[in-house]
Amino acid sequence: MKMNILLKSVNISDPSSSHYNSIKDILISDGKIKSIEDNIESKNKKFKIIDCKGKHLSQGWVDLKADFCDPGNEYKETIESGLKAAAAGGYTHVCVLPSTNPFVDGKTQVEYILRKSESSLTKAHPIGSITKKGKGKELSEMYDMNLSGTRLFSDDLNEVSTGMLSRSLLYSKNINATIISLPKESSLSNQTIVNEGLASLKTGLKGDPSISEEIEIEKNLSVLQYTQGKLHLTGISTKKGVEKIKKAKTEGANLTASVNIMNVLFDENEVLNFDTNFKIIPPLRTKEDKEALLKGLKDGTIDAIDSDHRPHEQDEKDVDFQTASFGCIQLQTTFAAFNTFFPKNTALFIEAVSIKAKNTAQIKEQAIEVGNEVDATLYDPQKEWKMEKKEILSKSFNTPFLNKNLKGKVCAVFRGNKILEF
Image (tube, rainbow, N blue to C red):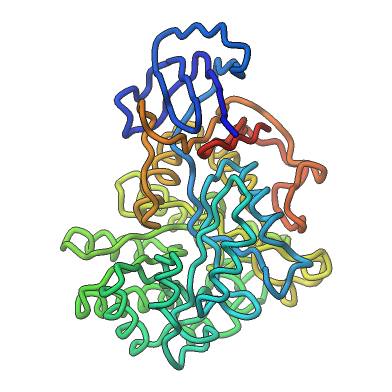
């Protein structure tokens, strides 16, 4: 079905576009951008006209890390519900974590995700596991998964041993893939719950030392240098971690990095009232760490911002802090939350989740230019709204933003001949 749309007076916020930061009319037909002009008049009644005054259009957003729990835990989330939440959050692409039941360690599981998502506007990109069942003992079917379209490999929250990291980085060079690693030294972070420091002292809960991340980053970087593969470090949460990544990039390492949205927004003070929605991995660190993450985004040390979307049903969260599951839903609120906290840095967010995240995930860029296929997000950075339960499209409701006022709303997403308006 053809999509014929005329966007009137839209601010183009795609840094790779020759029309960046200009207000234009954009004509979209048959899934492609046909014209970008100061003023386009269309008397064709088959064209849908959208008034975009005050709204911005960027390349479609990419989330590099979301748990859709499907197969195995569909009571928390399904691929369909996760992709609906992602679209409402402005994402046209989502990289889906492999830590399902069973783990995504072969082409059958990859093709299952692709089949279940093929009718959705938001495209699912399955992340394959590095090791079979994510248990760290032997490499997964990386080659077969790569043939099915997988470009990213991760064991999610499970630590990858030095040997397996080395083998996977060497192997990934043959298939042009990227290995994702969460820097967390398991013997130091075993059964830890909050940041070691103020949070652990005041709550009495077991603290996760920042050195756990820093030691693991050092190990990862050493193995990367040895193998000359391609590595993505996810879930960076400490100031020293940012400094180590910056130094490695300066020295030419084939390295990208991302930070979870919660670690950019909040520090360890949030856990002092035992709100389980702030129980996450990695834990919320110090104010100094939080500020270093934002600085790292600004100077390019940190490439992308991840939602780290992790749905849990109510009885997994409405318990004591120590027992509660880690994580919260984020896809619908990542942009709005960042824009609310850092309204002067909206352009930083857009570049991180569009161009830089696409490059990391090896997703083709579609700049806002005539002739390109449309893959875009329309948003209003000034729109104020409240995240009420009825707004949530995920099957779970574990969010720290429930009934909170936010600024910045996604208005529509476009990909090919598909459009969703909100």
